[in-house]
Amino acid sequence: MCGIVGLLVKNQKMRADIGKLMLPMLIGMTERGPDSAGLAIFGAPVSNADRKFSLYAADEDFNWQKLGHDFTNHLGTPARIEQKANHAVLTTHLEPSTVRVWLKEHYPSLHLLSVGQLMDIYKDTGTPAEVAERYSFQNLQGSHLVGHTRMATESAVTPAHAHPFTAGEDWCLVHNGSLSNPNSIRRMLQHQGISFETDNDTEAACRFLEWRMREGDDLRTALNKGFDELDGFFTLLMGTKDQLALVRDPFACKPAIVAEHDDYVAIASEYRSLAHLPDVKNANLYEPMPEELYIWKV
Amino acid sequence: MESLDLHKITVRELNQFLHKELPGKGVKKLEILNPDGVHSIAAGMDTEVDIDIQGHGGYYVGGMNKHANITVHGNVGWGVAENMMSGTVRVKGFASSAAGASGHGGTLIIEGDTSLRCGISMKGIDIVVGGSIGNFSGFMAQAGRMVICGDAGDGLGDSMYEAVFYVRGNIKSLGADAQIEPMTDADYAAVQELLNRAGFKHDPKEFKRVAGAKKLYNWNADANQEY
Image (cartoon, rainbow over the protein chains, first blue to last red):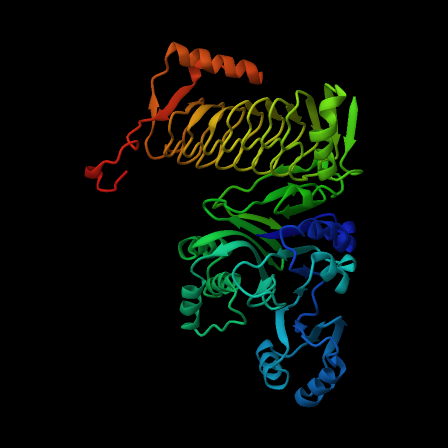
């Protein structure tokens, strides 16, 4: 079991409070996912040539300042580093491939959680309330976000195994359910030169869909191929730079409910995560149908 | 009227009151405020009482109900009135998956739509749905009746036993062994009686009967596993 939440704020004035609006949603899913939590927030984009790299250090006392110095010394250009507990967002205009190689060579113990111009990722073990407190989720600002609370059933409880998973740039995915063929998907993708961070089933789905879209599929085509290839149960919630997308497996084995309001679109595994939202009484509440793709644009 | 507020007490405290204190109090009607999608509201009732839930319920609302008449003024999550024994559960909005699952008796009325697996393994409950029902509904339904005023999804009544369904709208597909049968006078009367109970105004003549062909009751060695 796991919990998923998504929030897309249409009312510009409310975007400064997206963290506050979301927090009870995530905490409301604690019973569905008490062992880890995570969140991808899409905020203001960095300038055109820049990229944000969300990093995670297992060591609480990791020296981010030293990493900044080393980055400047080795690569000849400074990087902006914003630290939150043992996460940090590194911003630079250097190519993602350059940064990846440098990180792997000099800081192999760091986890690179995401790359993008709008998206930051925070994920860790602990209850949703603890994780939210650690990374000040209530202060987050942005247009949309994707969150997850995890109850592990198929792989270890570590920060890297927590959701969201990412691949490519400004693209993330959270998953409630379980896949029965993640290993064959992983093997198939490895033959395409795609490497994996964990043995988690969701990472296989995430890299599969990102690979399809990199090969030219749009999201709908990629998901249709996903229906053919992914075997198991899933409610998948995906975030891109300007949209949220939701899809449920043909048997709709995992729950989902949507509240569409003039000010926002909110998605959760269960209504109890939506009950606190402002004026939710006047929102259009509905359950997404199995095997249908729902897309909401920012 | 007695009023219980789930912003002030936990669902465990609520249900302990409903199970242990309510029977001796002679209360005939009470309301539950701020349900906010909480699970198991008024599950395990064993008292004749009218309960109004003012808002949306979570999973298992009125589960295992005996005797109580429960009205939800909103939507409900999975497994509403699952394993109900008697009494009535009415949902004014929509119900998620597995509504009335394994129900033995009583009446479940859903004014809106229900999601997948409605009435799965039902064992004598009557279910009346004002809207449409999702895929795989009535799977292995053993006894009881289900009236569907809207459409039915894929695989209706797969492997059903003695239960009978009446569908007014379209059936996307029937499950294994389920078949459409002619309506008899007894069927029209049954549909009218169930519609009256629910307060829905439709002509019983618009409904068709779905029941099990009973071909799965006995092993057929010649079927070559093709059902």
